[in-house]
Image 1 (tube, helix red, strand yellow):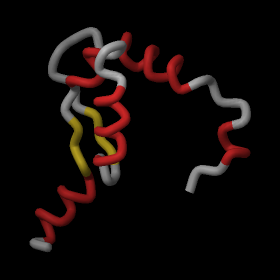
Image 2: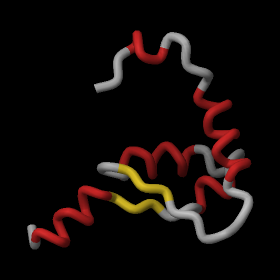
Image 3: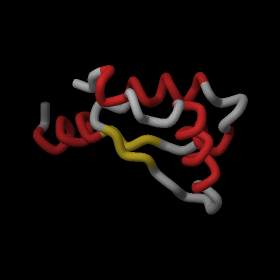
Length: 71
């Protein structure tokens, strides 16, 4: 898990999300996350300020593994 100590020197979330949103300058991006449900909720909450990022499809590696393994 991520600890508070790991985040002490990290830039604020708004800055990180803004930087990522600006990098998505061409269509057809996909974001990959392990258990993407949490990320999806966070990105949806930012949709007013980060439209491109919030609209970018997520690939969930947990769901992908379950589909491949038939579980």
